Length: 429
Image 1 (cartoon, helix red, strand yellow):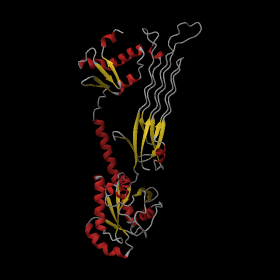
Image 2: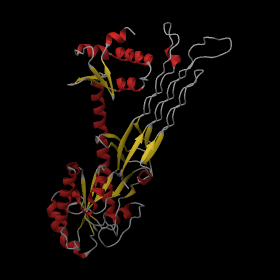
Image 3: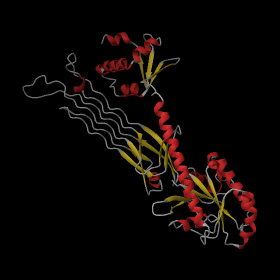
Image 4: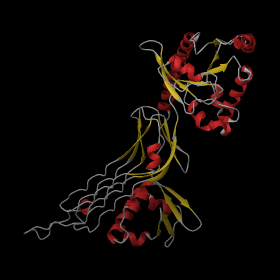
């Protein structure tokens, strides 16, 4: 279960309270309504050692707690608890509708908020002023975000083992690490990726992934190709394991060429990953007949004849893999440092508070701040509508409408609400 589709709902903000102080000998105590609490967020957290999304298949809807409502005596509502969703390290989080990548959780304990809780509404005590002594208005809590999320787990490994079925990848993984994959003398023994830690010495090691055998048409899903190919994308380099003995009637050179074609069809970037060529099964008599021909094919390119079952030639192979990784990681660090410097030199982009779009039948206002102001307004309360007008004016919405040529009686739409543009009547209120 390395993919999942779930719904997430952040908590709604609590409503502000309309309340007035009522005590003996205090006939006009004034407003004392408290604020609503903020709604909880939905947070995805990467967990090391977790490898499946099966729990989310059984619980496809994740909901955070709503904020508490405000109360009298200026008592604020409690904030809602976050909903923390645990996923395996290596999980890509996407918005299902737009396919936008929200996060790539590669590090343990790395987190991302995928749905933000609504802000709690202000109580009427917050609206008291010298000219507004008894406000009978409070804000509603903002609704929490709700969206559909798609999840995809990709193994996090430094080096990936690729090759045709029965090429000896699982045997090589078992030889070089403490992993215990299923091994047998028939194709497709491995039905899911396996990970192992290859230790060069006490402080030098890397993670090796045995990617199940790929076949022709894997990029189109043949042989469960899509389920396996995605796990190669995270690796920094590949060890291409070739069956030099060709006991199954295969040709080592054609296997090498066809598999690279499959990698390119799935994702062209995979063909650009550094590859180390491991010619396996040199302990078998049939391999000797093919060795010279394969060596001539690769020419001056360095290749590693090995026997995964006996261990011959394996140590130079893993030593070369480690040295190559060190070089790749040093280059990646240098590129990252350069990118940070360039990013710091760019001027920050101005953040627009709203956008005005003129359509055939209405002026449409978009933007999170304008939307929030409308959703948190009690439309049945006249004082609340006056406060909404003031918020929009301070935001610049009213002036923008005037510059766009809005006239008395025109329709203004914000989120799902429609209003009649009438600045004169609102200003006189």
